[in-house]
Image (cartoon, rainbow, N blue to C red):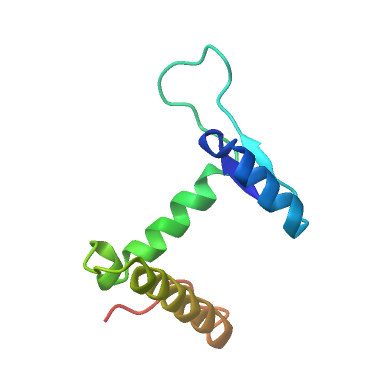
Length: 95
């Protein structure tokens, strides 16, 4: 599992240990200024872009965090199902 430097916390390390996951924390190089391309950062940005295409996730409409979590799960399930059904097609059709 990859994490940003902000997630270098004891709780995250303990959770990964208990679940048997390998945690790799991606940090900026010391002394670097301005924009620096970090390895594996594009994975998180791409995933957030996919989720932002869902109208209900584009803004925070939900009052309960459980509903937002369910909407994220539904969006990812739809994305995975589309990829399984149409392996040669790239993007999801627009609604």
